[in-house]
Image (cartoon, rainbow, N blue to C red; front, side, top):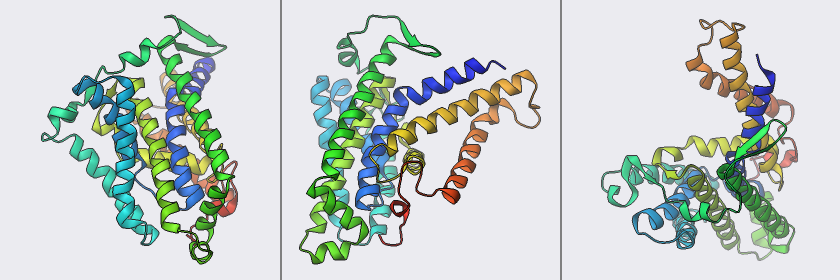
Length: 330
C-alpha cells in the first residue's frame, strides 16, 4: 500500500472545491438549524434552484454569468418565500415535511420531459461556465504543495469557493453577534419567550430562511461551475443529509462548525475509499469479504459508525455546545 497516495487523495478531497461547496451549503443550513432552530430538510432544493438558475440563464437563454448569478439568487429567495409563508407560523415539523418534499418535487420537475426544453431534462445542461474560467488569473498547469496538487481550473474554483466561505463566514459572524442574531438564538431556545418580548418571530424566521437559502444557492452555483454541468439527479435528498452529517460533526451553532465538518467528512471519506481499494489490490483484504464495487457503500457505513460514536460521546460535535443539538425545546 502506498500511504502517500492515500493521504494525497484525502487531502485533495478535504481541501478541494467539493469540501468548500459543502461547507458553504452547510453554513446556510447552520443559520437555519443551528441558530434559528428551523428544521430544513430541503437545503439541496436551494442548491438546485441556484445551480439551475445560473445554468438556464447562460446555456438556455444565452445570458451572461452575472445575470445567471442574480437569477439563481432570485430563485432561492422565491423558493424560501414559497416554503416559508405557509409553514413558518406552524410547528417546526411542518417546515421539515414541506422542505424535504419540495426538494424532491423540484428534482423530479427539473428532470421531467415537460421541462426538458429549458432544463435539459434527465441530461441536464453542460458547458456554461466559460465566463467564469475566463476570469481566472492562473496560467494553465498544475500547482501544489507537498502531497496536494490541483490543476489550474480546480485551483481557481477552490480559491473562489473558499473565498466565498470566508466572506459568508465573516458576514454570519457579524450577524449572529448583532441584535438580530441574538433574537434568532432566543427563538431557537424559546420561541414563546421571544414572542412575549414583542419580537416578530415569523419575520425573523423568514429572514433566516431566505438568507440561509441564498447561501445554499451560492453553493449550488459553485458546484455547477466546478463540474460545468447541472443534472437533477446530482441534487437528491442524500445531499441534505450529508450536510447535516458534517454540521453535526463540526458543531451546530458555530461559525466554523460547517467548515471543520466538511473538511473532516471529505478527508475521512476519501481516506477510507483509497485505503480500502489499495488494501484489496494488495491482498490485505479478501475480495470475497469486500469487493471493489462495495467499497463505496462500506466507506459510508464506517463513516456512519463513527458518527454514531460521536453522537454518543460528544453529541455537540467537535466545536459545538451540547445545547445546540437539543431538539426538545424547539
